Length: 168
Image (cartoon, rainbow, N blue to C red; front, side, top):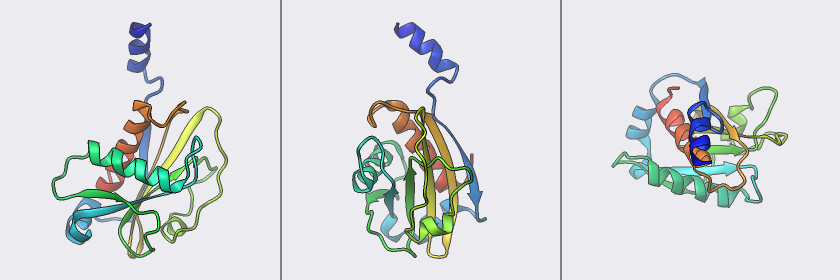
């Protein structure tokens, strides 16, 4: 059974997939290095997933990024109440939409309306700055039974990197 699962993994079944869907221009990595206060990037969440609300999801995403992102000058702090106009990484959970959400509204703290996909977990990561969205990535993975599944954690890290680096 383990060999079968490994073979399926090689062919993409259950693998997290994501891509940058919006970029305002410039290099977000340099912006974060220059303007992120004390190297701490605030992580917020909107929506719910598998019974967890925004506060728990923000804490989970910040911890996942802390464990898997290696930049000595950058740390992550869950702060769902962070006001608009500051640098933060906002994750939108259960974000299945016909079109991409209004990223400017997301950066102002307004949750777009979505519908839940029964087979796929859809997530957006939006890097917000004082003037609005800088970069947004959209990602998806087979719906996990638990948010502790490795594929879901890989999706969060992959999307965090894309939003902070502005690259696919």
